[in-house]
Image 1: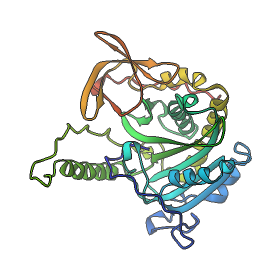
Image 2 (image 1 turned 180 degrees about the vertical axis):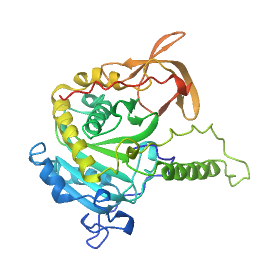
Image 3 (image 1 turned 120 degrees about the vertical axis):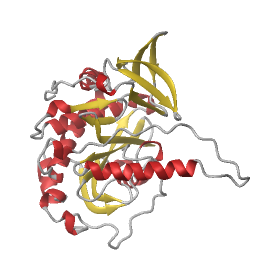
Image 4 (image 1 turned 45 degrees about the horizontal axis):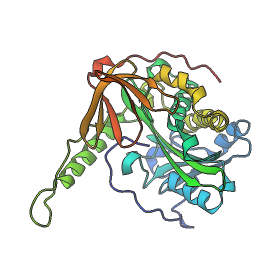
Length: 345
């Protein structure tokens, strides 16, 4: 789950204590979370997921360090524990891509993870982050949004709303025995207060820039690269009045569970056409950035069968694998509107 800010290094995982560090989500953290829409109702979530997630464990807690780290530890102990959904009202060490932290406050952001065991190895997971993005957009579109067509995808793993970052995806893996691989998918969705998220991003970005330019022991400044401005945040409340956390989680998990079952059987190919229909930057002029430097300018095309981004340049078509790259528009006005072509599977 990425983009809310450039963040500190990952916090080492510590198993939850037996005391109040991990509480049922019925126990609210702060007065601001007392309204039902700002809580996770475990009983209601399990009831609504009973048919579509038969055999899944559905866990809902108030606080944990990181739902991704929790489930990675469980898979390492026993891969047979999957499939699991684990949602938390607050993550104290929530993480995004490249070691970044997910900026959120209880009730303003939905954060959860899914653990699943796939056949094959890492090569068979190509395109999984893109298929996950498709499922997230479909799940959100199942809600009564005022403008579902305003949703889109930015390669490789961001969900956009009117060009702002609405949700991020982080996928991590562990071995799960011969011919199998354990997958943990972490998702964060901004529900409310996009302005507050932006303020925390700005503060974290400024702190990171100051730290990167700090003098070394010899008195010399460390070399720096140009900071890549984060995509501004968006919040679901702009297209859904008072988003209900339990309803949003249920809608997303239903689509994600179906996606994982289909991906395990068929890989990325069945999702490729839908991803391209949701591609917010399709046909737009983009810059591809690596370690703070522009490495490529061109026009964003679609993706290949492995989920790599295809870019048309003056020297011909280039294919970009995920890696440590970021994609930004050269001209913000060039992003195309996504069309609401997301039918049920």
